[in-house]
Image (tube, rainbow, N blue to C red; front, top):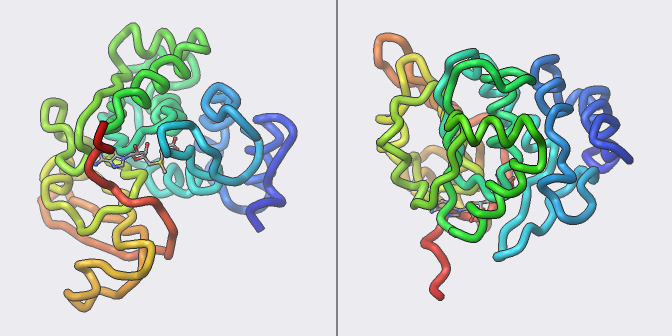
Length: 240
Ligand SMILES: C[S@@+](CC[C@H](N)C(=O)[O-])C[C@H]1O[C@@H](n2cnc3c(N)ncnc32)[C@H](O)[C@@H]1O
């Protein structure tokens, strides 16, 4: 299904994802149209498939970015604070910023992108500076890219209305749930590519799945396994 959604331009790619039902929300569609993937993917930017971005990493497929936005969109409102863990190319960080700060980038809010590879953090900053709006978002401090271990979240700017994790965790790291606002939502792939996970030992199901974790207004936490995926793992940084 996914490859039918590729396009010859950014707008055509996103329109095809919308027609294919992989994106349903108009705000998500507009936010993705507002970020040219060619600024972030060095090759085949309008193909609905993951692409290499260097340093052993990939930019995820557009339909996965669409899914993540769809699950988080209700929390990506004006003024929201957002954490994007495993920000890689910076593409999704920029889409989140469009959803929170608007197409002009003049609205209020904060989006923090974290990656543990410093070269990728530099690349993300440069990618986002390719558009005037992206440069404004960084210059104003409303978007920040940080080198850190995302498994620890980023306490300095917590709590977050939305936390997205772009690589698979071994477990639902409690610290990420702690850093959620109430209400707030965490979107996180959990489990290993070959099927194991600490969740399976807890009787919560083997394999790699997206989990959506909601912290309700009264502080109670609701966890739901929503669909099966295949992500690269969250790891220690590569040794030099
Ligand atoms: C599949 S890529 C997704 C990148 C990004 N969402 C995109 O689409 O461009 C996963 C990213 O997670 C990063 N990563 C892996 N382990 C990490 C960790 N412990 N802390 C922070 N980033 C990590 C990798 O460096 C890589 O950039």
